[in-house]
Length: 141
Length: 141
Length: 141
Length: 141
Image 1 (cartoon, helix red, strand yellow):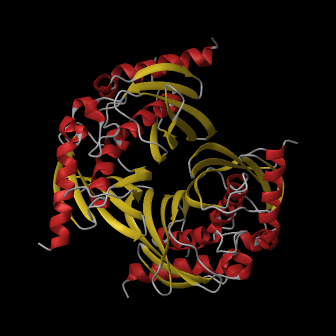
Image 2 (cartoon, rainbow over the protein chains, first blue to last red):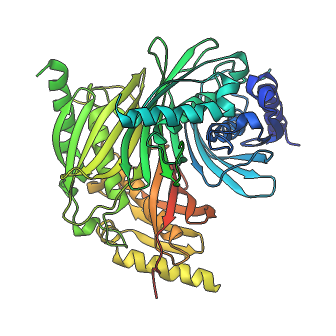
Image 3 (cartoon, rainbow over the protein chains, first blue to last red):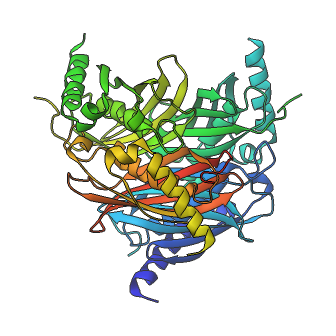
């Protein structure tokens, strides 16, 4: 593992360990490299909306979490400034959702990341794009 | 209260009562009218991200919930197809967030809604835009 | 007219006069106030796409132009950082399109603007949301 | 060249030849394959905004054009329903901009495409995401 990837893994692990949300929702950090992260979560009954399918907000939250791991992967504190999501198919209770975030551009303090959310079987659930802005300071020592 | 507003209130109440997320996160439906809804939620420790501020995914979820109440307010089952959010300021633990959704357009099966998320004191936290698509069938009898 | 509105009018007029695009496409600045602008354009044959309807890019350009007038209305040089658009109905050759931009939030250097594009008859064509960032310096002396 | 790619090339060529915008702005269709397209355009004086840089609307238009070629590449008439763009760096007069559109998902009638706009030298100018909806009928016979 390269030094850059090792740092990405430590920064993402730090965020994952401190997030109230990851504990509350059982979000696993599956992999992190420089400019890349993968996270997964199982859709539970308390994540369903009033139509009895996975709440779009929970799908966004998983994508946003993978985005955070990827945009903080260079160990500079970085926040989401804007995000856009397209919902392609409903997620069902029990589905294991996998979110993969990939850096598309990093220009000065701004970064753009594409996150694909799929079921474990590979069905497309959502596509997310995030704009990040670094605010300075290290994520981990 | 007009008949249209009464129907909106019943449809939103139905969704709010059935959502796993609203129970899990203490999301209150404060008001619903035809093409409008307001919902609120207090930021808890388990809603914080790895930077110790309100997780963007939780802010999105609240906005998306108000959007769902507003776009189902005419009692036709309607789903989110796409959404975009701008994060303007961090939310802190204990903040009471209020999301107000207003219909901007309803053309055939497509609707566009603007949702503003503010603290109870009126500070802007996020602005959300949602594109909905009606799928038919009534929300409540 | 208030001083703030008069400054908005001058800043927008300055931009409109210098834009190559407004001359090329006949974009009229109809009104500008602090945090608000309205601009209009007629759909010409050279603005049609391969399906013979108004090109989405031209509709975006009109909305983006009204957004620029509104976000520069306080006479601080301000650029678009991100934008999102929903296309609701096709525009036809000869349609006079009117774009109205309204400020939704202004927090530090970031602003959010909603732009509605309609035909002169009031039919919804598109809804646009823009995120701006001020870069400093005055638009007009 | 596969049959699918040959069809993509014919459909994109048909659109490019019929577009008023491509003629007006000198947009070249550089390549089209199933789910992919590349188009380019040189920034002219009449494409500058009031800050004397390439108008965001023109950059969007180029991206949207590549998106149209890619989402019609399977020879089913398909329209843009929503799009989101992040502007990363200003384009200057004389810059040759290249937009590359790649399909991310195709689920039923909905498709998601990522378009990257760069200068010929490879500098990132913008990242665009588009949601398409097929409306039926063939683009070319």
